[in-house]
Length: 270
Image (cartoon, rainbow, N blue to C red; front, side, top):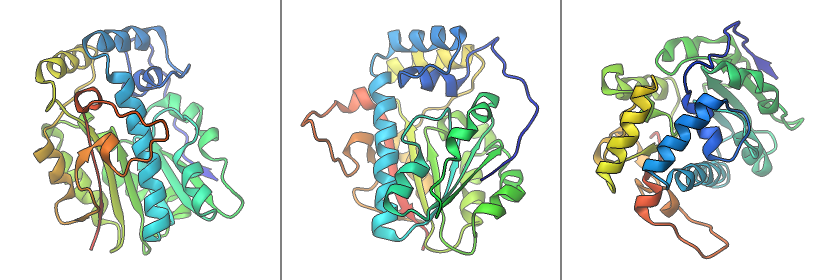
């Protein structure tokens, strides 16, 4: 196990996206300010709870597919969020016990619970880096990354519900390109991204809530989400709504596209 530990304090004066996401998933690692903001979002968009659950379910399916069908044994999960079991390394190591996973996030509360993220199988390994996706070079240069991952071998870059918190002014495509550029052929990108495509007025309200709470957001249309996969070989069924990517629902239910409002995809670097 390895991790970088920063001395930053937890800011409870304004809502944080990771803690709001924890609330959507029914977790307990959030504060009153996060709950208020999350409930305001839920008033505008009741499907947010379904969206959050489907995002987690996509991460699980994508991880299993990459491990079973594409020989991936290493993951870099950026924007990890507050641990919710099963975490990515638990899913990966349930398929390949020697899987190695590095988590990265910039929320001190995630750091507080990082021990949960580093309970690896004996054959595998996990690490945690306190890092910001807006500084991909610092993330890639972190010694803990090289300590856990071998960048000469394929790595799956996992960006789940993260890039809509990176506005165009922050160069989101450049950031993803820089991260993928450090990974060899056979690596993968697994990405999910909220979208206003199915309910523009609703998502305009959600955008306003996040921005007023101090969190910049930019929810993107399908064509703009697909741009993140430029130069990659998309796995079937391509960029699609979250619950429609290789579904394995046992209960026979299917939520509506507008309720999910999440574009997802997995691409392989040639």
